[in-house]
Each structure stands twice: as C-alpha cells, then as structure tokens.
Image 1 (cartoon, rainbow, N blue to C red):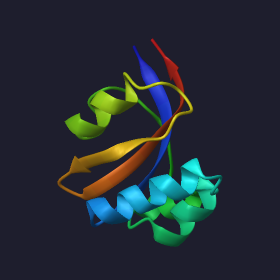
Image 2: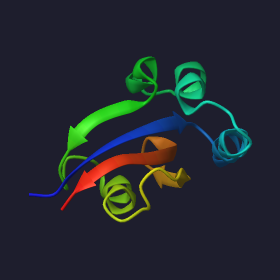
Image 3: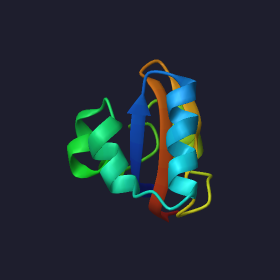
Length: 93
C-alpha cells in the first residue's frame, strides 16, 4: 500500500501561508517556522506528521502528498482546518 512521510505548517489565512512560503523559498527554516507559526499540534515537531497512507488525511491534503514533488514546498493548500504549506519527505508506491 502506498505511504508517505510529510510535514506541514497550518495557518488561518492564505496571506500568512504565502508569506511563510516566501520565507522558506528565501532560505527560511521550515522546522523553525512550523514551531513558531503552525496552528497544528504537529508544529511542536516542526510540522512532522509521520508516515501515513492515502485516506488517513483530508482529501485536499492527500492529493498533494501523493502527487507532489518530494522535497518541494507546496501550497497554499486549503482545507477545513485552514491553509497549509506541505512538504513531502518521502513516498512509497
């Protein structure tokens, strides 16, 4: 069964998400930014969500995690929780 490891930063607005993405693209540390800004409890672990399979996360999140380029920050990804920046760490098909 396919699985992936990913991390994310969850914020309330698209603007916050885009601002954080720009910081990361300019050399900002994803881990530190997740710890400081993420509204998800995973922020304490730098946004790390562990390993999961399709269907364990909301559909919008799954779509990105199981199709995006590994190691490239994706987003904003809008879900009912807010706006996410997502980075796929690894994936097995």
